[in-house]
Image (tube, rainbow, N blue to C red; front, side):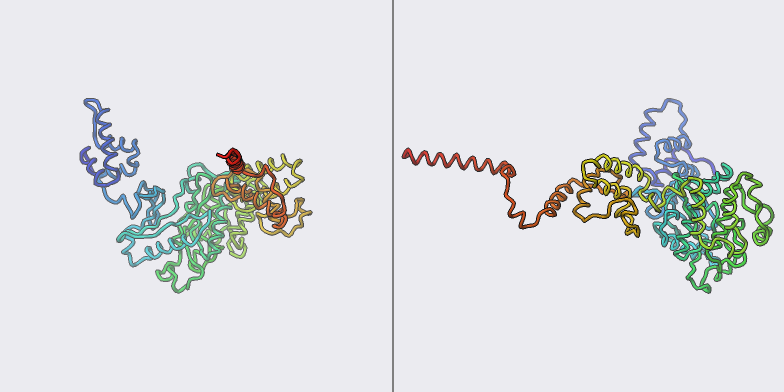
Length: 504
């Protein structure tokens, strides 16, 4: 299709409603003022200027240059770019029109909606329900599902990063610690899905996204199976689809009957993904599709050390156990996989992920800073507070009151026993440690009104009501305005007495 002229391109921009008319006119006036006689102003030049001014994205400009002005809006969202296309749907980067929050929108092609010979629409809805039912840091979240006529779409969390398939293809096999860390996080996410009754059935590198902070996100639950469903009502049975998944990562039992598998099929696929991260290729990359499926059934995977001679034996053992041909010989749960990899990472002095909520790391990324500040304050006051700084230090590092009851006795743990509420409040004001909003820490944070409330509570705790009534009020405790009123009354009284004595 020939490129549109500059006039036609501007007409397409206006009809698309992608750019606010006032901002578009302002840019055009500025370009007019900056232009020199003889400057070429074709559609491509205008498109480049609109992209530079951030009024259009590159993808939007390319579509407009192709003569298209429709299809840029889906419901309450404006499409910004194309992220990818799979076998069932296309995924776009989009932005909410009012909130300006960026999301990923998965759109089911219109041709798939009317295809009564397949389960695409039902599977699409199944994916939305599956993702909405899961809430885990290592699973992509779903925000909404809707349709505009025959355009069906799912609004999902946008993960700014790259999937592991692209990463390995571009950079080669990963470092051992990085590969173990990614599989560890994926195992945690799968464990959450399995506990909720979902089997993913399509675990592979392309379905594991890594964001800019190194967190793994599992996506594409379009083939997920709910273990509590009636097998006779399963989509794989209803549409005679006995084999679902990707051949290079398919468990032996899944190649025979996909709707009868359990969580251990996902563990096998995750093991093949682990193999891919370590070697740069699937376990059986050669041959036709039937030959590769048969290799998964019968052949042992080639030794990882052929590609990586220095591969740690214990890490290789974990990977091979995940890929055992018999389900009974594998790890029996994703939690076991995570535990084994977590132990290996610990032996390498590497954490599984920065977002883990287990143990002392629950303070988050700034936890060590907060703990250090709290401990420093507590130690500096140890000499003047009779030892109560030990309590503050214990609270700061989470030994008291932040992890629930403990079976260890106070003396065995080396910290003071929990004190009554009044004494705990005494310690609180002496920890002026700041933290970001919303961060969950065990360190008390005071507001401007709390010191007065604490002082009032402290006074009540130290004296009974009878003692308070019997306690004499000191003169210097009276407010200044009372002294002023008493002085004025004395002056008036003296004037009246003087007038009476002089007979005036």
